[in-house]
Length: 219
Image (cartoon, rainbow, N blue to C red; front, side, top):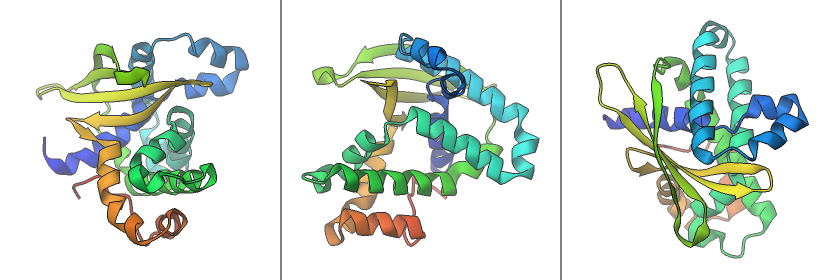
């Protein structure tokens, strides 16, 4: 796969793992029932649901980008363990950081990603099938890895792996790997130098102001 496709696939992979955001917002009993679902079933069902939604609402989202951004933000907020993932991205720079500092960085990183790559979903081929290959435990009881593939007509399958952990609100994704490229590792490398020079809050402020942008690689 060409590297310029990585940001697009990262964006779609993040959305595809959303744990029943629509149902969870609709009624509390529905939200409770999703906690009994396996991570593999969550990935499969929600991949199909979100790809279908993007296809059905493509014209609407193209005409009004604010609706697309609202859709993306709602899914992202429901599925992604922002603070835990942000601590992994911060790495050594997050040692001793307060929860408030980590949250500021996590929110700024998520907002930067959505601003930069959200609209790319409109260019994505949503007529795909998703196949879950396996679900395996992570070391030290950290969660599970759900290995899946995006199946394209006339093209090679695209491997997408989700690292998920059990939280009080059910299963949440904290890392996504597309063709072996890790969300966490990509941004840990990108922000290592800025965080060596500035505080977490200052780097978060740069992200929020657009002086620095989250870069998933490629163009």
